[in-house]
Image 1 (cartoon, protein in one colour):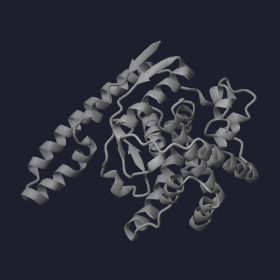
Image 2 (cartoon, rainbow, N blue to C red; image 1 turned 180 degrees about the horizontal axis):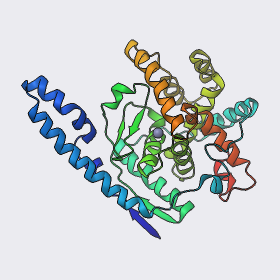
Image 3 (cartoon, protein in one colour; image 1 turned 135 degrees about the vertical axis):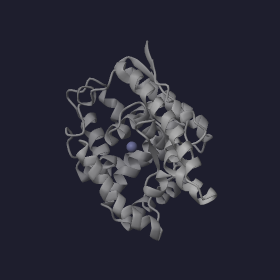
Image 4 (cartoon, helix red, strand yellow; image 1 turned 180 degrees about the vertical axis):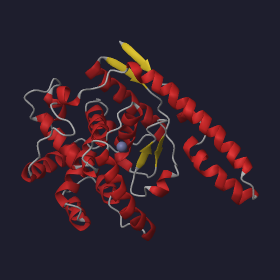
Length: 312
Ligand SMILES: [Zn+2]
């Protein structure tokens, strides 16, 4: 099978190069009272970062990209709205399926990242006929965490660097999958959500499939609760879910600290705008868009891919 290797050199650096570029001048001023060592370090990191990005860009020139509307009968501006009664019915089915096939198995983050990446590479290849091989490295910290306290993780779309910000339990495989779709070169949030979901749910690996279903449930509950945290928590309680799943679902809607809620309310609006000016629907693509996409694909008369991939 056709195979493309993206080097992702920046992801193998011992620390995030973007963090060095941003923080080294400030750190050296604080520690040494001098800016020069920081500037030198910063410039070196910038050179490595740019070199890595250029190599990745060159190797991506021959990638066969998925045409979402052709393959799945749905895309960012081509989705049918899922009715609320259908959402409620789906919540019941997904909760039942999660309960009946529940596994408590947990894998170390690095192994999980490799398994997720393999599933993703295989799924994309099943659509395009081409394996796009990328790094499975993940970081546990990134400065972006301070700017986007509401995010679970981040992928630097230029360097492919991925950092996870929180322990999300059963959701971890999906969070990694989402960021790894970006690393493979798909930068839209809707595409990251659906490719991660479809790859994990159809992977044949119970831990990965469970994570995908949990994300589908989480997003449906969030849409039904319409930004009302209290309503969301009540819906989780009403579902007699496995204890670990209920705990992880509650943890995704924590009461924010003062810092988080102040920064979040500003950054969320900016982030929503950023998505809109880059041809996306906004933050809603994470939940409303994601679930509408699966609904549209599952009922599509024209999708080239088997619509049962999105069934539940
Ligand atoms: Zn994303």
